[in-house]
Length: 137
Image 1: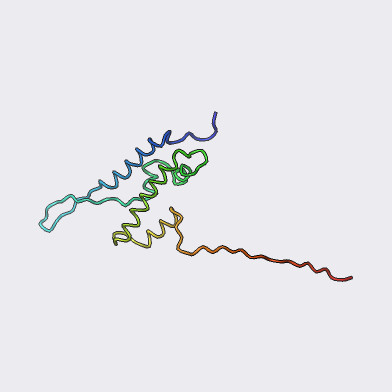
Image 2 (image 1 turned 180 degrees about the vertical axis):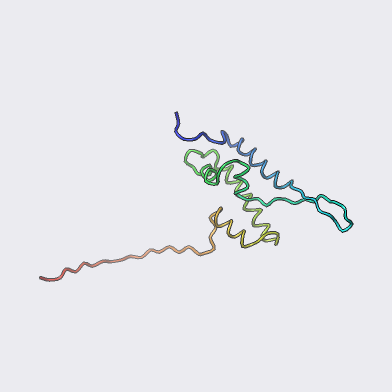
C-alpha cells in the first residue's frame, strides 16, 4: 500500500478537463450594468486568470499544483500543468501590456508563480588561496 494521500487526478486528461472548466468559467463571466438610458445590459467581464484561481477550481493547494509539475512521480502531468501555467502567464502579460491590469501586480505574480526575475543573474567564480602561516617558536 502506497503511503500518503491519493492523487487528486488519476490522469492528465482528467486534470485537463478541470483546467478547461476554469478557463471557460473565467472567459464566460458577465456582469450587469445600467446604461445611460437606464436599461440593464449584460456585458462580457472576463475574470483574470491566476494560478490561485486555477488551484481553487482544481481543489488543490498551490504546492500540490507545483508537485504535479515536477518530474518525480507525476511526469505524465508535467505538460498539462506547464501549458495551463503558460496560459495564465500569457493572459497576465497581455492584460498588463494593454493597460487592462495593474502592471506592478502582474510583475509580482510573475515573480512569485513563474520564477521571473528582473535582476541580472551573475555567477561568481572566484579562486581563493589560503596560506597558513604558523608562528615560529
